[in-house]
Each structure stands twice: as C-alpha cells, then as structure tokens.
Length: 391
Image (cartoon, rainbow, N blue to C red; front, side, top):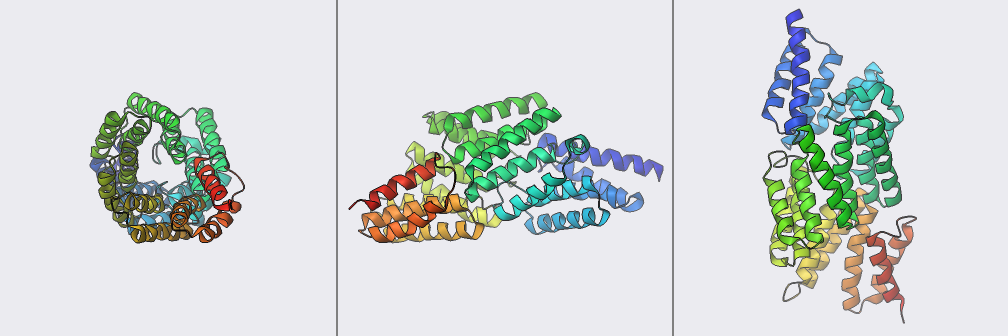
C-alpha cells in the first residue's frame, strides 16, 4: 500500500504536468490520470480522488465529451461542498466556470464570483500546478471578464482582466500570466483593437516558448493571425491561423470551433467573402456539436452579412440569420452580441424602408447599456440610430 500511495502521488502530479505542457489532448496525461485513478481506488480517499477527477474533467473537455465534462464538474462540487474544504471548493468552482468559449455566461459569472469570494492567494495559489497549470483566482477573473463583455459590461470586463494581471504578478506565477495575455487578446478582439491583440498574443507566445508549454499555442496562433489580418498583414495572418488550427492542442479541444469562426472573420477582413461563407457554415454546426457557443450569435450575424454581400443579395436568408443570432444571444443573456445582431438587422430594414421597425428594434437595446460607450459595437449602433432618427 505504501508503494501504491507513492506512485499515486507521482502519477497525479505527472498527469497535471503533461496536460500543462502538451495540452488537454495529451495522451500521456490521460494515461497518468487513468493509472492514478486505478491506484486511488485501492488506497485513496475522496481528497486524493478529487485532483484525479479534475484531471479527467480536462480529458473529457479535450475529447468534446460534454456530458461527462458537465457531470464531472457537478461531482467535484458535490465532493467539495460535502467536505467543506475551501481549497477543493475553489477548484470545484474552477471546473464549473469551465471554458471561456462555452458561452454559458450567467453560470460562468456566478461560479467565478463564488470561487473568487473563497479564494485566498496565500493558501490557494500553490495549487496552480495541480489544477490546469494556472492559478484559479487568475482564471476566475479572466473567465468572468470574457463573460461580462459578452453580457454587455465591457468596463467591468476590463476591470476583471486588470485584477487578473495584478494577481498573476502578486503570486509570481508565469503560467497564470500566460493565461492573462492569452485570454486578454480575446477581449481586445471583441473591440477590434488589432494592435492590442497582436501585442498580447506575441507576449503569450514568447512566454509559452520560455516555459516549454504548448497548451495555449494553437489558440494563440489563431488569434494572432486574426489580428495580423486586421492590421493588413493578410498572408502572414492567414498562415498563423492555419498553423494554429493544425496544432494538436487545438484540434478537437476547447476553442476549436471558435477558431474556425475567427478564421471566417479574418477572411472577411481579407476580402475573401466566398471562402468566409464556406468557413462560417462549417463553424456554426461545430459550435453546436462542441457545446462551444460563445461566438455562435456572432457567427450567425457574420453569415447574414455575407449572404447580403452575394452578387444577388439573399435578404430573406440574411434576415433569418440575424434573427437566429438574436435568439442565441438572448438565450445566453449576451447583450453585446444581441446588439451586434440587431444592428445588422436594423441596417437591413433601413434599406427596405422599414425605418420605424429598425429604430424600435435597436433603440431600447442600445438604451439598456450603462457602460462601454467607447466600444466599437456601441459606436456603430449609435451612428445607425442617429441615421434612423433623422426626418
């Protein structure tokens, strides 16, 4: 039994390390966690089983086994609540807020707030290596920030990312700073600030190389490519996107469907609208299959815009896409994405002399916002409302 306990500790640590280095798709990591679970059933207890279950939560995520992924997160929370252990509770909420690309905004914000309310950097930051290779407090602020932006609170989203950065510096954890730079790029992409996206992804890629980890590399290359295209570096940008999508850490794992949508957005900027339409048609069902719906509303909006750009504009089909986008956004309570879709639909109605309908759709939605008036989406919506209000 003593020998098995020692191997249990080694295999659990090795599994976490392999996942951090090579991504959640790492077969070596999955093998270590499988062996650890076998040993734990012989000699362990719930506390020893907890990090192994957390490891399998990563494995299920990488395999797009969403049923097992959600079930394991619930089981982790049940164990932590039963034991009343603050360290386990933080990590249970860490699993429950899940992936930033999941799109369950209300749940993500709720679990992040609950986890952050318990989190103590002095006590819990030492667990970063075991649970995903990054600190749960930093992760909570980052995930909450992305969800807040989509929900319509961009100023609060920026504040959470600032808190994440300060915490990563405070605990002096490079893997967590990698997460700040990596996910922070998405916040800049939401607002089309391409230079800021490029800067953040370059920092993240440099840190990833320095640390010898490839967990983030696929998503980093895709986002950097999108930024490069936005800055006019079309060939280099599309090459980055292709390279990122080929990486093992992205194929089939979290962010894969969103990366396809990002490619479509980049192709639009590059002027390749026919190819963009084909790619977005691939992205939307992939998002539904992978339960990865952060960008689904925007993908539908983009598809509608691309249909309008066809040589013979397909206005009825485009309107259906915009309505689908609004429905998806409302189901997620994603006010920023709803505003983006409603702006596109209102612009279409404007061209059809349905000005009053367009204004009635857009005005109350714009008036809902209490912050973020310097963001691109709100500026575009305000400019269109001004046009719709002219006699």
